[in-house]
Length: 432
Image (cartoon, rainbow, N blue to C red; front, side):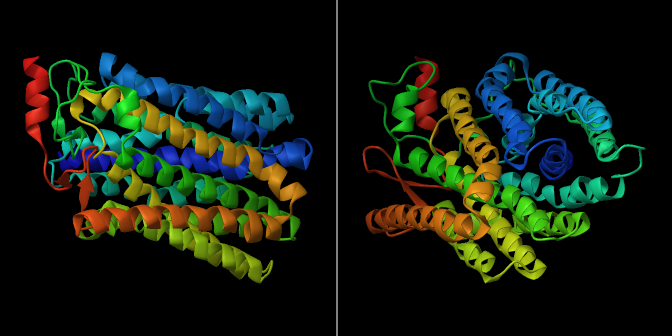
């Protein structure tokens, strides 16, 4: 089982490598092909397709198993990377948009690898399984921007060599998906997909669990989705616009790529202990800490346009993203029971992809028309301050009710330990 989790971690790193090649290279390539304010349109198109695909991915997995949709994602990535090479070769902006939409088919598969890791974990190991898969992103700092930097001019045309590397990474992903021993979803049902279940039956319960509206109205789901949304949107707009701000400030391409690498290491290195922190202090407190760290990171960007402030700011924002994202993902797994997994995963992943889409899509416009210091010093800072306040109030309320931050509150205000799994609900569902 550990071997499969490690392979998923490697897959996550490869998928994130392709993602960050797109973020770092495509934005710069589009800038050289067209106007600055259109530079992030290809990334926005990629993430729009990813948002739509993320809604259907859990349902396709439930019907066909894990391997076919993951194959499909890797093939879409290969097609997109191949078209990117052509677009870079002939400097075709419209083809860059089309190729990015194909790569959008791989993006939600990459993000879903962390939840697929729950298939190979025990209840006690679930938070660490998510963190271990996410920790694979440390390699993406090297197989993403670093490879893009090294292969930048391997082919005669600028940027095409980096896309060749992305093509190779997608091909490797296709091979790894063949090796991983995914369970047959038609024959097995892993209850560890959820680590906390409702403690009482209600009128909305059916053979497929509660309705999606009932799940969404839960405090646990709302805060988990809110935390994930804020973590991704704040990080995405700062990371994407930082590259443009650095180029505009006279920094070299190599310095921009190095800053992105530092940012990626900040994003994924904490994953080696984030799962343990969730077990010790509760996922809510970890998520709150991550949002607070991202808020602090915005102050560094106000110190100046020197490279040190970009590097340190992106590292701090990356660390905050990790705690916020992993904390919200672990908290999310406590909001549904196994029968509700498909609908819950579809909605949650769509929310996260939507946040990523709007942040990357709007980053060029925001940086161009507001300016880097106004964007980070006013807009993002107010946004993060409001998010920290909301999550802090919710965390304080849960602690007031339970006297233990690791304990959740169900819809009928009964306490459920996050380390326990209520099997009775699912048993009654199967009986029905």
